[in-house]
Image 1 (cartoon, helix red, strand yellow):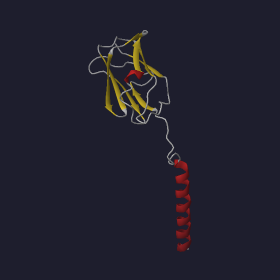
Image 2 (cartoon, helix red, strand yellow):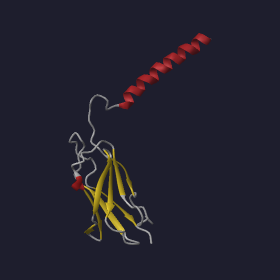
Image 3 (cartoon, rainbow, N blue to C red):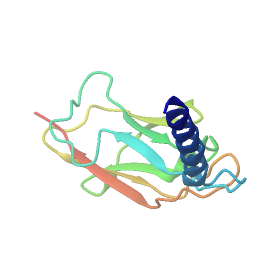
Image 4 (spheres, rainbow, N blue to C red):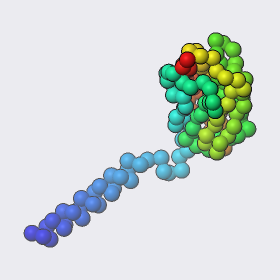
Length: 135
């Protein structure tokens, strides 16, 4: 009886390990386009702090080309917000506005043509999200 359980266990282990390899996919050298992992503030977030060390942050799934800085725009009431872009690492971009944000105001952020280090075009373009500041 014990031998039967061991045989069943080995059979199940072989079967499940084969399924896992099939489910992974994309490991045959196939390149996927970079995408946005998260944004901060998040889309639709309200009561965002507007003072102190405020910044907008975007994390990508792949290392991006730091020379493509002109693909991020933050705007309020149709007017571009002045600020500086920083690459924290190859996958994380920060935008720091030059001035304090207006209270109780909707800000829109937009990402256009971004490229990975391997010239793969950003999948979600344009990517637009907005947030509202607090009092």
